[in-house]
Length: 294
Image 1 (cartoon, helix red, strand yellow):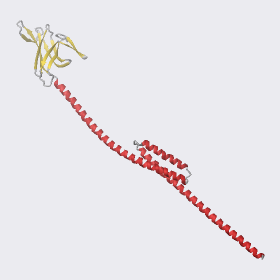
Image 2: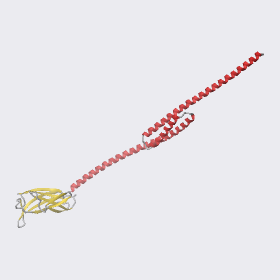
Image 3: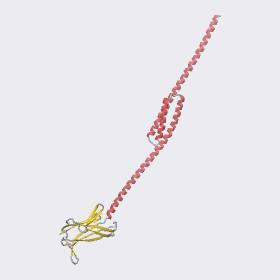
């Protein structure tokens, strides 16, 4: 009877131990399973964190390249790149839990969308700048050619003006001077003797010129004897910073046709030697000659 009770107690103990063992095995299995699941989640979030970080770095590089092109959108691009840099710093500090990763992914996608829009807009601006640059270069070329053409025209006009000015000047030809003795009858006899001369006759021709300005012309005649004395009126006229002492003036009505001019310079006690005769148009010497009295 006692043996039966002992066997029953033993069986009961064995059953309890078996149940405890089974419970322990179930608990160990569940704990192990939970740990594996947790590790897998940690590994997954770690991978996601690295992926998001890599994507953000690529995003930053895209902005860097766009900013380097120095377009009118550079300030806006710099501001968006700064947002990416800040998000990268936050992600680096984060623990990488699932909730945080969802937040960072959402922010990344938002920044990526903004980046795509800005880059597309930047590309449009670049193309427009290329077009404007091409048009500007073409305009510069056209303006350069026009400037050169104008410079040529200005040069030609200046040359033409100089030619016209030069061509419009009157030419004094055949300047001659002779000494004459005047007899009591008024007859003039040419002489080369200084002691016999009573008057010097100066004559010259103004050539025909169709483009010269017509009207009254005044010429200043200067006669200098062998002792460097100015004969005649010995008047002085000033032209700007130049002065001229002359013997007499002769006034001519010029009508673009050839004009013969002759005028006498009376005197007495003429010196022997070489005389010089100069014709001036204001301060400009237009003709000269010399003669000798013995």
